[in-house]
Length: 223
Ligand SMILES: [Zn+2]
Image (cartoon, rainbow, N blue to C red; front, side):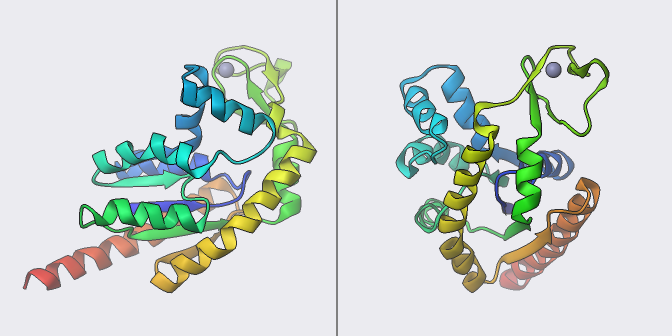
């Protein structure tokens, strides 16, 4: 299965994609992780990316593509999170897959209302050591990381102005993308404000259903 998970910042798509990758044995391609790794390693691409992130802007297509395409080609099946973010990237992704006679099986859009996003992200605290994310409404005792005991901090891009800017950038670029996948008939919605367990079950149901369809289509084509 080749799945794309869409959703605004704060929709929980990263957490979901990771869980799905483990459960379904799909390679989880997290654009955020790949970008952060480049930034932490201070590669030249990483340094460029850092400037964009600090301003709350999206990293340009060409830069993200350079980082991602090799990984996408190497993995037969995957779940993509954080890419594509706009129509152009979606077309580029299809072109890369098309070169190898592959296509996306499913696109899942996590819907979440703007107020909920602001609440989730503005209250978010991150462990300074291991990166685990907490919310101010639900902190571990002692207000330190429950995994490694390190202190928690608010990420630079988790403040209200930058979050609002990120939401606006997201909204502008997502509409044509959604339209593109809807016309292809592979777009599905899940309500992202439900509990993470419910969201996960909803996504699993969609994936299982699509998996059966793909198996059926492959079988029919062979006969
Ligand atoms: Zn920690």
